[in-house]
Structures are given as C-alpha cells and as structure tokens.
Image (cartoon, rainbow, N blue to C red; front, side):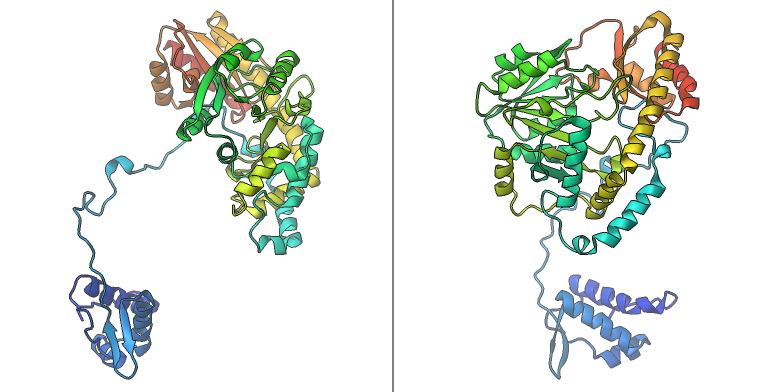
Length: 470
C-alpha cells in the first residue's frame, strides 16, 4: 500500500496518516481506478495498527470521494478525473515579491495621523459592556444581523449624533459598516455610473483611488481659505462632492457657514446632486464647542453623512456608519436586499451599551483633555526647536495639524531619513491627488499626536529636527 506509519506521533493521528497515504497513492496513480483496497482487518494487520484507525481513514476517503464501497465486496478506488498538468511557475513556493516579513516597531516614535492611544482606553468598562451584550442579546447573536445593522445599535447611534453633531435622522436611515471605505463603495453602487465626482485636493487618497477603480469620473478640486472651491466644482460639472467640512483632511481647515450654505445651495440646482460629508474626527475640538455637521443644515435631503468610531473607540473594531436621505435609503434596501452585515454583532451590541451607560461620553471627554494637552506641548516644542524654520496651520481640532518646514531636502530624502531614525511621519504628497506641489524649499508634513506620549514629545521633535537638518 506504500504507506509509512510513524507511531512516534500521537495515536489519534494514525488514521490521518492512513488517509493521507492512500490519497497520495491515488493522486499519483499508484492505485488505479476501480482497484480493490485491502479489507480493514488485513490493512490493520499489515500496518500493525487498530482496525478503528483504518476504518476512520477509509471513511474520510469515502466522504471526500477518493474511494467508493460496494456492499459485501469492500472498498474500491474511485475513477477520479486527472489533473491537467501545467508548468509550475512557482514550484510550490510563494514568489519572493509576495512574501511578508514581520514588522517590528521597537524604538519607533509615531507622528502618524492614523494612530490612537490604547493606554487610555477603558478596557474594563468595555468588557463589562460586552458581557452585558452577551447576556441581553443571545438570540440576536445567534442570527445573521440585518443588512443595515441591529436596530437597537442604530437607534443608539442616532441619538448620539443628534446630540453631539446635530444630525437630523431616524434610526432607519443609518447603515452600519465595517469601515468608511466599505460604506463609500456601497453608496456609490447606488449612484449613476455617469456621475461626475469632485473630491478635495489635497484630500483622502483612499477615497479617490476607490472611486477611480469603480470607474467614476473623479476630479480633484483645490481649496481656498474657506474649503473646497465652488467655481471648480461648477467647472467640472460635478454632481457628487466629497468634503470634510468640520476638519478638512489633511489641512485642518474648518469650513465656515458661508461656504457650507453655498454647497447646500449648489445641490438644489439639480435633482441628482449630493454631498458626502466625511465627519472622521469631529469629536475632537479644543477651546470651543464642537461644530455642527453640514448635514444638520441640510433642508433638502442632499447630504450623506459618514461617521466612524475608529478615532474614538478602537480602529481595529472597524465600526463606521452612514446616514442616507430617504430616496437613497429606498434604493439601498432594494439593491442590498440580500446583503449580509459585515460588522461583528457582538462588538456592535457592546458599543451600544458603551454609549448607553455613558462610558463613551466619559472616554471622549478624557481623550479631548489628553489630546489637547499633547497637541499644545508638541506645537510648543516644535516652535522652540525649529524657530523661524516652520509655519504651523494651528487649527484647534482633530488629531493632526499641518506644518510647513523650510528645507533644501526633497520629500524622498525626508521620508527615507525618517525611516532610518525610526520616526513615523506622513508628508503632504501622500494626499496630493494631483502631484502639482511645486513650492521650492518647503516640505509640508501632516503631524499627528494621538499616539505620542508626553514624555516622548521632546525626543520625537529632536528626531524630526534630525530628519530635516542633520
């Protein structure tokens, strides 16, 4: 039978050795179609194993279709279609360019706009909410969640954003998804393919790339002091505009009321005009109260509001949501009638209790205090170290700010040096949707501070100075 049994291994695995040995012999053609296999007893004696081990091995082969049985005659090799042999370009190994190496972050300091500080997250309270979710929603957890997400969770989110962002909606209008990118993809499936899309430049490159891959006609539109330029939106003949009015990404500009009204008035000139408001970090506002959402001003149901819990809870949870106007909600329910919710139901119900118990509000308040302190310390230390060599766009909001540095170095030199000294930074060119930044002797960085400990600020700034001037 060409089977070798290694009895040094756990005896529970002997049947698997028998199964694999016979399977390999069949696939290699050593055992021919319709050839009779030894009886269970005779093979057990030949291999010096138990009859049960042979029986389990035969049953697995039978279940997978490698053998068949005839009553009172025994087991036979199935007539299996032969593999078509093609040249094995990879020689059973993954090509080197596709391999991944473990990434070590030891010794790194982060000025990333994407990072968050897990050390201040109330994990004990979160686990208590998770236990409560398990106890209260056993039936719901045993079922597939509704495509828009559980109603109880949407109702909680609805009340939260009404209070904190002034969003006008009903729970039925909310669609929960595993990340804003996924939701944007779903939304754009409802929008006509011949739509013309305007996006902020500089702006969120992931949205721009997603829209391009979906074959939309996408146009980067530049900014002025009030935000996205209205005359360029008109000149591009756009009918869908993506904006970040509460804290423009990545410049940090806050769109004033005059430009917001201009945008809303623009939507009324055609029935197919929409604004997608990405409210990605509006919970973080320092020195003044939060700014109301653009959607809160909408009287014509033309704003699609996008929110996320990635900045306030945990990025790895992948919980985001969008608020659809009634006409798009109707389209959504028709188009995604068979769609299954991607988000983890247990995490959604945990978030529900995290908000309901007031722990979410406490956590956001703590983060605002901590992040405001870090932001001020970082800006002060950068100004002290760089003096006249820097200009900071000091907008007291969000988890990052834009800084312009005088230097003779190129973006590539800056980025390569930062990697060498283990400093995580992101330059503005990552977010320029059209590579047209021709300013000489100046480098712009998007500097985040959420995952930078206060005691590490001085060291981070020293490394930053090293990047530019050493």
